Image (cartoon, rainbow, N blue to C red; front, side):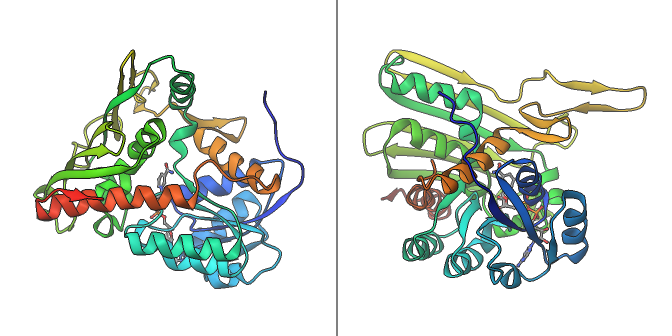
Length: 343
Ligand SMILES: NC(=O)c1ccc[n+]([C@@H]2O[C@H](COP(=O)([O-])OP(=O)(O)OC[C@H]3O[C@@H](n4cnc5c(N)ncnc54)[C@H](O)[C@@H]3O)[C@@H](O)[C@H]2O)c1
């Protein structure tokens, strides 16, 4: 049974007003049980524009000022992957609830520090692996848990980007690795389905195209994860697909079970928009309806706000984030050393 929106109003701040941060700002502004108090970005113009557009009271450039404001009860943190630790730890020290963008962190030490700070504060933490709220991943989980597929055995998951992402969309791509940027989404789903942790990780990566462009991060990763309960996941990701492709995401997800099979391709070519002088191949799983955000990212943000207001544990906890970070860091280590990593 649907529980609708929790009663109350959560006073909210958003740190980072880039692509994903603006999405959080729009969600908070649209939610009936949240109030957008402050937004923050080191880029003052970006913070001001977002505040004006979405009705925040304050536009700040130093997140310490936002965290010092007692009027703010909860924050979204949407900073580049490698900058999550310091701001999240400070947010808990300031007594805020935190919706932290994926990946939780790019090192196990950082993830552990975040968990420690959260446990000390007693506040809520959710890591925003929002793909769980895509209807196909959600309903597969329900069918799996109801036993309709038998036992889960194997996942094959591919999540790729075009070259546009590491070269133009992100100024900080050299500071992350594909396991943290992309594979983490599919690893989170597989682990959620398998209900088990990584035991042994093997991986390879190669650096050629991006390195040649002066961006020091591998072009692709191929990884195999054996889980404690015997399930196996094969996760692969690249971000050097040609920019001439019509859509910047290429994705495939297959779940093989003892009595069933699920095949998910979240990017089929079904939403093509052509005018007399332009062609756009749009994503279709999120968007705006009547000026308000809809889709899985909205659902994830709404879940967090409802969990805080109802004093419930959000679906994706700090513990989940820590266990996922251990597996992702093992992928990076295995690929760099050429040795299997036992967890
Ligand atoms: N859940 C998802 O599906 C999803 C999708 C895209 C990105 N993300 C995650 O969201 C995070 C942000 O990604 P993005 O694509 O929005 O990046 P972005 O580069 O577009 O935005 C980052 C913003 O942070 C600002 N910033 C950097 N340092 C700061 C600081 N110290 N204080 C305040 N602002 C600061 C930058 O000026 C920039 O505006 C990343 O961790 C990324 O992995 C998640």
